[in-house]
Image (tube, rainbow, N blue to C red; front, top):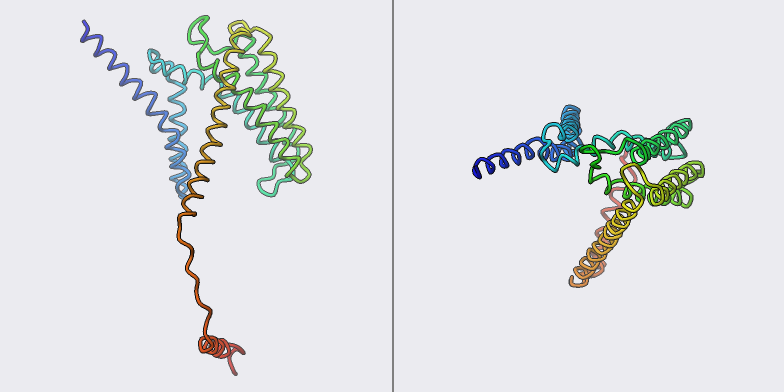
Length: 273
């Protein structure tokens, strides 16, 4: 009986490896493959490989329902729609103004604001209404608790930083900056509502707990990034300090200067007719 259970568990692990982890590897591999060559067929094949991997990941709740990893595919399938709306909306807002490359029509700015707002409404509906990702009745997807506060916090910070950057560095980008401030304000308002208003499946206390975890994660990422940059700079500085001083070259002698002058003179004046 124990052998049968072991064989069954090995079969489940193999199915998870085949139908979840291999598709996960297909996404970055396909993206790298599509960008590694200028050949049109290579680019198409790489994009198809990444798209197929994404589809298989989203289908993992049905292909490998017994695997805990399928919860990630379940969440990805649930949030890919609103997240794409928010990202496309921010893209339309950012490139519908005075940009030197890839400029979009000014009418796309309003469309971008509408798409970003629709994405936020969709995600808010997943928190406060019946759209919350559930693996089973009354069982919220555990990855939703990680994604939702992290997404709101990250969107608010990045949108506000982008708005300030557009004002300080950009030229005639005030309209786009105001739109990015609006995106930041909406995400911050939704975050504050999540702290105080309970949803049908997620309470404000649970949201606060996971928000602090998201703050800790982001702070760790920022501190780790700064430390890695500092260590890299110190290594480069130490290496350059250890190098011997460059060898100086003695100035040219009079005979060398005369030779160079004669060579230059022989090549001036063009061809004689």
